[in-house]
Amino acid sequence: MLAHGTVRRAARMEYTVTMPADAPAVTALRRIAFLLERALEPSYRVRAFRRAADTVERMDAAELAQRIAAGTLEQLQGIGKVTALAITEAQRGETPIYLRRLEATEGQPVEEGGAAIRAALRGDCHTHSDWSDGGSPIREMAESARALGHEYMVLTDHSPRLSVANGLSPQRLREQLGVVRALNEELAPFRILTGIEVDINEDGSLDQEPELLAQLDIVVSSVHSKLRMPRDEMTQRMVLAIANPYTDILGHCTGRLVVGKGRPESEFDPEIVFEACRQFEVAVEINSRPERRDPPKRLLRLAVEASCRVSIDTDAHAPGQLDWQIIGCERAAACGVPLESIVNTRAAAELVDWAASRRSG
Ligand SMILES: [Zn+2]
Ligand SMILES: [Zn+2]
Image (cartoon, rainbow, N blue to C red; front, side, top):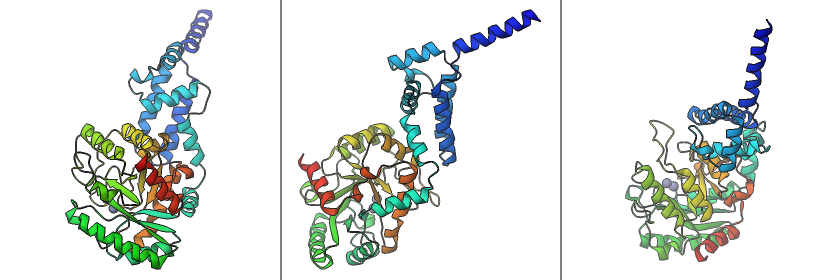
Protein backbone atom coordinates (compact mmCIF):
# COMPACT_ATOMS: atom_id res chain seq x y z
CA MET A 1 0.00 0.00 0.00
CA LEU A 2 2.77 2.32 0.97
CA ALA A 3 4.65 1.65 -2.23
CA HIS A 4 1.54 2.21 -4.27
CA GLY A 5 0.89 5.59 -2.58
CA THR A 6 4.44 6.70 -3.24
CA VAL A 7 4.12 5.93 -6.90
CA ARG A 8 0.92 7.90 -7.07
CA ARG A 9 2.49 10.82 -5.31
CA ALA A 10 5.48 10.68 -7.60
CA ALA A 11 3.23 10.63 -10.63
CA ARG A 12 1.34 13.63 -9.33
CA MET A 13 4.56 15.50 -8.71
CA GLU A 14 5.79 14.77 -12.16
CA TYR A 15 2.50 15.98 -13.52
CA THR A 16 2.78 19.34 -11.77
CA VAL A 17 6.38 19.83 -12.78
CA THR A 18 6.18 19.09 -16.49
CA MET A 19 2.59 19.87 -17.47
CA PRO A 20 1.33 23.42 -17.15
CA ALA A 21 -2.23 22.08 -16.99
CA ASP A 22 -3.42 25.28 -15.43
CA ALA A 23 -1.57 27.47 -17.95
CA PRO A 24 -3.69 30.59 -18.43
CA ALA A 25 -3.18 30.22 -22.18
CA VAL A 26 -5.04 26.90 -22.23
CA THR A 27 -8.01 28.40 -20.41
CA ALA A 28 -8.01 31.48 -22.67
CA LEU A 29 -7.78 29.46 -25.91
CA ARG A 30 -10.63 27.17 -24.85
CA ARG A 31 -12.75 30.14 -23.83
CA ILE A 32 -12.17 31.70 -27.26
CA ALA A 33 -13.21 28.43 -28.93
CA PHE A 34 -16.34 28.29 -26.79
CA LEU A 35 -17.37 31.84 -27.67
CA LEU A 36 -16.69 31.30 -31.37
CA GLU A 37 -18.78 28.14 -31.35
CA ARG A 38 -21.62 29.94 -29.68
CA ALA A 39 -21.37 32.65 -32.33
CA LEU A 40 -21.83 29.94 -34.98
CA GLU A 41 -18.36 30.32 -36.44
CA PRO A 42 -17.27 27.57 -38.84
CA SER A 43 -15.91 24.62 -36.94
CA TYR A 44 -12.49 24.64 -38.61
CA ARG A 45 -11.92 28.13 -37.21
CA VAL A 46 -12.86 26.95 -33.73
CA ARG A 47 -10.64 23.89 -34.11
CA ALA A 48 -7.58 26.10 -34.58
CA PHE A 49 -8.00 27.41 -31.03
CA ARG A 50 -8.74 23.99 -29.53
CA ARG A 51 -5.73 22.49 -31.31
CA ALA A 52 -3.50 25.27 -29.99
CA ALA A 53 -4.86 24.69 -26.47
CA ASP A 54 -4.03 20.99 -26.74
CA THR A 55 -0.51 21.77 -27.94
CA VAL A 56 0.12 24.13 -25.03
CA GLU A 57 -1.34 21.69 -22.55
CA ARG A 58 1.05 18.99 -23.68
CA MET A 59 4.04 21.28 -23.40
CA ASP A 60 6.57 21.51 -20.67
CA ALA A 61 6.25 24.78 -18.72
CA ALA A 62 9.91 25.64 -19.26
CA GLU A 63 9.67 25.08 -23.00
CA LEU A 64 6.54 27.21 -23.15
CA ALA A 65 8.26 30.08 -21.36
CA GLN A 66 11.34 29.72 -23.52
CA ARG A 67 9.34 29.73 -26.77
CA ILE A 68 7.36 32.80 -25.71
CA ALA A 69 10.61 34.61 -24.91
CA ALA A 70 12.18 33.60 -28.22
CA GLY A 71 9.02 34.15 -30.27
CA THR A 72 9.13 30.62 -31.67
CA LEU A 73 5.63 29.40 -30.76
CA GLU A 74 4.60 29.49 -34.39
CA GLN A 75 7.13 26.78 -35.23
CA LEU A 76 4.87 24.35 -33.40
CA GLN A 77 2.27 22.46 -35.31
CA GLY A 78 -1.19 23.85 -34.73
CA ILE A 79 -0.05 27.28 -33.61
CA GLY A 80 -0.38 30.25 -35.94
CA LYS A 81 0.08 33.99 -35.61
CA VAL A 82 -3.27 34.67 -33.94
CA THR A 83 -3.05 31.81 -31.46
CA ALA A 84 0.61 32.56 -30.68
CA LEU A 85 -0.29 36.12 -29.75
CA ALA A 86 -3.17 34.96 -27.56
CA ILE A 87 -0.87 32.47 -25.79
CA THR A 88 1.80 35.08 -25.20
CA GLU A 89 -0.66 37.58 -23.79
CA ALA A 90 -2.35 35.01 -21.56
CA GLN A 91 0.96 33.76 -20.14
CA ARG A 92 1.91 37.34 -19.35
CA GLY A 93 -1.16 37.45 -17.15
CA GLU A 94 -3.23 39.54 -19.55
CA THR A 95 -6.56 38.70 -21.11
CA PRO A 96 -5.71 38.20 -24.80
CA ILE A 97 -7.04 41.02 -26.94
CA TYR A 98 -8.83 38.50 -29.17
CA LEU A 99 -10.67 37.18 -26.12
CA ARG A 100 -11.38 40.67 -24.80
CA ARG A 101 -13.09 41.57 -28.07
CA LEU A 102 -15.17 38.42 -28.00
CA GLU A 103 -16.14 38.95 -24.37
CA ALA A 104 -17.00 42.58 -25.06
CA THR A 105 -19.69 41.55 -27.51
CA GLU A 106 -20.82 38.62 -25.41
CA GLY A 107 -24.05 39.00 -23.49
CA GLN A 108 -24.95 42.08 -25.48
CA PRO A 109 -27.61 41.14 -27.99
CA VAL A 110 -26.16 41.57 -31.45
CA GLU A 111 -29.34 43.36 -32.55
CA GLU A 112 -28.81 46.05 -29.93
CA GLY A 113 -25.15 46.54 -30.81
CA GLY A 114 -26.08 46.59 -34.48
CA ALA A 115 -28.80 49.18 -33.96
CA ALA A 116 -26.39 51.43 -32.08
CA ILE A 117 -23.93 51.26 -34.97
CA ARG A 118 -26.67 51.84 -37.52
CA ALA A 119 -27.78 54.94 -35.62
CA ALA A 120 -24.22 56.30 -35.85
CA LEU A 121 -23.97 55.90 -39.64
CA ARG A 122 -24.41 59.08 -41.64
CA GLY A 123 -24.17 57.72 -45.14
CA ASP A 124 -23.67 54.78 -47.47
CA CYS A 125 -20.46 54.49 -49.50
CA HIS A 126 -21.47 51.87 -52.09
CA THR A 127 -24.61 52.29 -54.22
CA HIS A 128 -25.58 51.77 -57.87
CA SER A 129 -28.02 53.50 -60.18
CA ASP A 130 -29.52 52.64 -63.56
CA TRP A 131 -26.45 54.18 -65.17
CA SER A 132 -24.80 50.77 -64.60
CA ASP A 133 -26.66 47.70 -63.33
CA GLY A 134 -28.93 49.33 -60.74
CA GLY A 135 -32.67 49.48 -61.25
CA SER A 136 -33.41 53.11 -60.40
CA PRO A 137 -32.38 56.61 -61.37
CA ILE A 138 -29.82 58.47 -59.27
CA ARG A 139 -32.44 60.85 -57.93
CA GLU A 140 -34.63 58.06 -56.60
CA MET A 141 -31.70 56.39 -54.90
CA ALA A 142 -30.67 59.69 -53.32
CA GLU A 143 -34.18 60.55 -52.14
CA SER A 144 -34.53 57.09 -50.60
CA ALA A 145 -31.18 57.40 -48.84
CA ARG A 146 -32.26 60.77 -47.48
CA ALA A 147 -35.57 59.29 -46.27
CA LEU A 148 -33.58 56.68 -44.34
CA GLY A 149 -31.90 59.49 -42.45
CA HIS A 150 -28.63 59.56 -44.37
CA GLU A 151 -26.76 62.82 -44.91
CA TYR A 152 -25.04 61.48 -48.02
CA MET A 153 -24.75 58.58 -50.42
CA VAL A 154 -21.72 57.76 -52.52
CA LEU A 155 -22.76 56.85 -56.05
CA THR A 156 -20.48 54.02 -57.15
CA ASP A 157 -21.53 52.72 -60.54
CA HIS A 158 -19.35 50.13 -62.27
CA SER A 159 -16.22 50.70 -64.35
CA PRO A 160 -15.86 50.06 -68.12
CA ARG A 161 -14.60 46.47 -68.10
CA LEU A 162 -17.65 45.21 -66.26
CA SER A 163 -19.64 45.38 -69.47
CA VAL A 164 -22.23 42.86 -68.21
CA ALA A 165 -23.12 45.49 -65.62
CA ASN A 166 -23.09 48.31 -68.19
CA GLY A 167 -19.92 49.79 -66.68
CA LEU A 168 -19.39 53.50 -67.32
CA SER A 169 -16.87 54.58 -69.96
CA PRO A 170 -14.74 57.61 -69.01
CA GLN A 171 -17.06 59.75 -71.08
CA ARG A 172 -20.24 58.49 -69.41
CA LEU A 173 -18.69 58.92 -65.97
CA ARG A 174 -17.80 62.53 -66.83
CA GLU A 175 -21.37 63.02 -67.92
CA GLN A 176 -22.61 61.49 -64.66
CA LEU A 177 -20.50 63.94 -62.67
CA GLY A 178 -22.45 66.78 -64.28
CA VAL A 179 -25.78 65.14 -63.47
CA VAL A 180 -24.75 64.67 -59.84
CA ARG A 181 -23.65 68.30 -59.59
CA ALA A 182 -27.07 69.49 -60.75
CA LEU A 183 -28.94 67.07 -58.47
CA ASN A 184 -26.89 68.18 -55.49
CA GLU A 185 -28.06 71.75 -55.95
CA GLU A 186 -31.64 70.54 -55.65
CA LEU A 187 -31.18 68.03 -52.87
CA ALA A 188 -28.94 70.10 -50.55
CA PRO A 189 -28.15 69.74 -47.70
CA PHE A 190 -28.26 66.06 -48.69
CA ARG A 191 -25.20 65.20 -50.77
CA ILE A 192 -24.57 62.67 -53.46
CA LEU A 193 -20.84 62.10 -53.32
CA THR A 194 -19.24 61.16 -56.60
CA GLY A 195 -17.62 57.79 -56.82
CA ILE A 196 -17.09 54.54 -58.62
CA GLU A 197 -16.88 50.84 -57.93
CA VAL A 198 -13.79 50.29 -59.97
CA ASP A 199 -12.68 46.84 -61.06
CA ILE A 200 -9.35 45.64 -59.77
CA ASN A 201 -7.76 44.35 -62.96
CA GLU A 202 -5.91 41.04 -62.96
CA ASP A 203 -2.60 42.87 -62.67
CA GLY A 204 -3.78 44.92 -59.67
CA SER A 205 -4.30 48.14 -61.64
CA LEU A 206 -7.65 49.97 -61.56
CA ASP A 207 -10.08 50.00 -64.45
CA GLN A 208 -10.50 53.75 -64.95
CA GLU A 209 -8.39 56.74 -66.04
CA PRO A 210 -6.34 57.99 -63.08
CA GLU A 211 -7.18 61.63 -63.79
CA LEU A 212 -10.86 60.74 -63.60
CA LEU A 213 -10.42 58.74 -60.38
CA ALA A 214 -8.67 61.80 -58.97
CA GLN A 215 -11.83 63.86 -59.44
CA LEU A 216 -14.07 61.47 -57.52
CA ASP A 217 -14.93 61.86 -53.84
CA ILE A 218 -14.71 58.15 -53.00
CA VAL A 219 -13.34 55.12 -54.87
CA VAL A 220 -14.43 51.59 -53.97
CA SER A 221 -12.11 49.02 -55.56
CA SER A 222 -13.41 45.48 -56.02
CA VAL A 223 -12.39 42.20 -57.62
CA HIS A 224 -15.04 41.02 -60.09
CA SER A 225 -13.05 38.85 -62.47
CA LYS A 226 -10.85 35.78 -62.16
CA LEU A 227 -11.96 35.20 -58.57
CA ARG A 228 -10.31 31.78 -58.50
CA MET A 229 -6.79 33.13 -59.02
CA PRO A 230 -4.06 31.31 -57.03
CA ARG A 231 -3.70 32.63 -53.48
CA ASP A 232 -0.31 34.33 -53.91
CA GLU A 233 -1.34 36.07 -57.12
CA MET A 234 -4.62 37.22 -55.61
CA THR A 235 -2.81 38.59 -52.55
CA GLN A 236 -0.44 40.55 -54.78
CA ARG A 237 -3.27 41.78 -56.98
CA MET A 238 -5.25 43.06 -53.98
CA VAL A 239 -2.25 44.65 -52.26
CA LEU A 240 -1.38 46.55 -55.45
CA ALA A 241 -4.92 47.92 -55.62
CA ILE A 242 -4.84 48.84 -51.92
CA ALA A 243 -1.53 50.63 -52.38
CA ASN A 244 -3.04 52.62 -55.24
CA PRO A 245 -3.61 56.11 -53.80
CA TYR A 246 -7.06 56.32 -55.41
CA THR A 247 -8.45 53.31 -53.57
CA ASP A 248 -10.41 54.40 -50.50
CA ILE A 249 -12.46 51.30 -49.78
CA LEU A 250 -11.82 47.62 -50.55
CA GLY A 251 -15.19 46.24 -51.75
CA HIS A 252 -16.55 42.77 -50.81
CA CYS A 253 -13.06 41.33 -50.34
CA THR A 254 -13.71 37.59 -50.74
CA GLY A 255 -16.33 37.79 -53.50
CA ARG A 256 -18.23 34.94 -51.86
CA LEU A 257 -21.94 34.32 -52.35
CA VAL A 258 -23.77 32.60 -49.51
CA VAL A 259 -27.25 32.25 -51.02
CA GLY A 260 -28.46 29.78 -53.64
CA LYS A 261 -25.73 27.67 -55.13
CA GLY A 262 -23.27 30.20 -53.73
CA ARG A 263 -19.68 30.95 -54.63
CA PRO A 264 -16.60 30.13 -52.57
CA GLU A 265 -14.36 32.85 -51.17
CA SER A 266 -11.42 34.03 -53.25
CA GLU A 267 -8.20 32.91 -51.67
CA PHE A 268 -5.66 35.44 -50.43
CA ASP A 269 -3.49 36.00 -47.39
CA PRO A 270 -5.79 38.06 -45.16
CA GLU A 271 -3.04 39.11 -42.80
CA ILE A 272 -1.05 40.68 -45.63
CA VAL A 273 -4.13 42.24 -47.23
CA PHE A 274 -5.46 43.74 -43.99
CA GLU A 275 -2.02 44.96 -42.97
CA ALA A 276 -1.86 46.74 -46.34
CA CYS A 277 -5.29 48.26 -45.68
CA ARG A 278 -4.10 49.52 -42.32
CA GLN A 279 -0.90 50.99 -43.74
CA PHE A 280 -2.51 52.64 -46.73
CA GLU A 281 -5.56 53.70 -44.71
CA VAL A 282 -7.95 51.84 -46.97
CA ALA A 283 -11.26 50.93 -45.34
CA VAL A 284 -12.35 47.30 -45.47
CA GLU A 285 -15.94 47.18 -46.64
CA ILE A 286 -18.57 45.26 -44.74
CA ASN A 287 -20.88 44.47 -47.62
CA SER A 288 -24.42 44.13 -46.28
CA ARG A 289 -26.01 42.40 -49.26
CA PRO A 290 -27.71 39.29 -47.88
CA GLU A 291 -26.16 37.07 -50.55
CA ARG A 292 -22.66 38.46 -49.91
CA ARG A 293 -22.23 39.23 -46.18
CA ASP A 294 -18.62 39.84 -46.96
CA PRO A 295 -16.13 39.57 -45.28
CA PRO A 296 -16.96 36.44 -43.32
CA LYS A 297 -16.83 37.06 -39.57
CA ARG A 298 -13.53 35.29 -39.02
CA LEU A 299 -11.91 37.67 -41.53
CA LEU A 300 -13.72 40.69 -40.15
CA ARG A 301 -12.29 39.84 -36.73
CA LEU A 302 -8.84 39.72 -38.31
CA ALA A 303 -9.41 43.14 -39.88
CA VAL A 304 -10.42 44.50 -36.47
CA GLU A 305 -7.34 42.86 -34.99
CA ALA A 306 -5.23 44.62 -37.64
CA SER A 307 -6.79 48.00 -36.67
CA CYS A 308 -8.28 48.49 -40.14
CA ARG A 309 -10.80 51.14 -40.94
CA VAL A 310 -14.18 49.82 -41.96
CA SER A 311 -17.03 51.04 -44.18
CA ILE A 312 -20.49 49.51 -43.70
CA ASP A 313 -22.23 49.65 -47.05
CA THR A 314 -25.29 48.25 -48.76
CA ASP A 315 -24.09 47.91 -52.37
CA ALA A 316 -27.74 48.75 -53.10
CA HIS A 317 -28.92 48.28 -56.68
CA ALA A 318 -32.45 49.47 -55.82
CA PRO A 319 -33.93 51.92 -53.28
CA GLY A 320 -35.31 49.28 -50.86
CA GLN A 321 -31.87 47.70 -50.65
CA LEU A 322 -30.52 50.89 -49.07
CA ASP A 323 -32.10 49.65 -45.85
CA TRP A 324 -29.89 46.55 -45.76
CA GLN A 325 -27.21 48.37 -43.80
CA ILE A 326 -28.43 46.87 -40.52
CA ILE A 327 -27.18 43.47 -41.72
CA GLY A 328 -23.64 44.82 -41.92
CA CYS A 329 -24.07 46.69 -38.63
CA GLU A 330 -25.01 43.51 -36.79
CA ARG A 331 -22.00 41.74 -38.25
CA ALA A 332 -19.82 44.64 -37.12
CA ALA A 333 -21.30 44.44 -33.61
CA ALA A 334 -20.75 40.68 -33.47
CA CYS A 335 -17.09 41.14 -34.40
CA GLY A 336 -16.40 44.06 -32.06
CA VAL A 337 -15.73 46.68 -34.76
CA PRO A 338 -14.96 49.92 -32.87
CA LEU A 339 -17.29 52.77 -33.78
CA GLU A 340 -14.40 55.18 -34.38
CA SER A 341 -12.96 52.91 -37.07
CA ILE A 342 -16.12 53.12 -39.22
CA VAL A 343 -15.55 55.75 -41.89
CA ASN A 344 -19.20 56.35 -42.70
CA THR A 345 -19.93 57.54 -39.17
CA ARG A 346 -18.19 60.70 -40.38
CA ALA A 347 -19.86 63.71 -41.93
CA ALA A 348 -19.62 64.01 -45.71
CA ALA A 349 -17.00 66.77 -45.61
CA GLU A 350 -14.82 64.79 -43.24
CA LEU A 351 -15.11 61.67 -45.36
CA VAL A 352 -14.15 63.57 -48.49
CA ASP A 353 -11.20 65.20 -46.69
CA TRP A 354 -10.02 61.81 -45.52
CA ALA A 355 -10.02 60.48 -49.10
CA ALA A 356 -8.36 63.61 -50.45
CA SER A 357 -5.62 63.61 -47.84
CA ARG A 358 -4.78 60.00 -48.64
CA ARG A 359 -4.34 60.88 -52.31
CA SER A 360 -2.12 63.87 -51.74
CA GLY A 361 -0.08 62.41 -48.96
ZN1 LIG B 1 -19.09 44.61 -56.67
ZN1 LIG C 1 -21.39 47.14 -56.11
